Image (cartoon, rainbow, N blue to C red; front, side):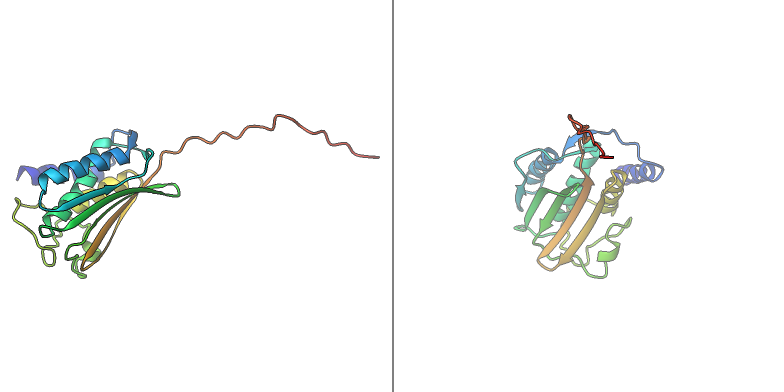
Length: 191
């Protein structure tokens, strides 16, 4: 019950205007740490992570972004059978950091897919929920709210054998300095 109350309070705070602690956050580090935690929580799944060599930095709340990735990984663990492969990737697409969590489980039922980010929606009808404690049905709505509070978006694609959640967050861009030309060429007009 306390978890339900905490989740509802977080959603209420995000609904009233995000009070996030913004700092530079390397999402590569966030994803690697979240996958390490997921491996401990779900030793019967096959976990992997694919990240670029360099940092992928966004301006955001590190704790809340970790919660986004952790919720997506927990969703894959909870709603797929043992032996399922779960891959978390980090990449860059234009001005966005892209985090994707993909599993090869049973997929999300087509009738639930359009509502999967709504509060209290549960995908138990098609994904093999295991008894790992009660779900509040708020995990994916928290993902959507936190991502939106960071100016990003989250999407899902699912068919049997492949479910992919994709989070896009604006990259922390350095200010581009455009300097004046160092040499000016005078223009002379012949009269």
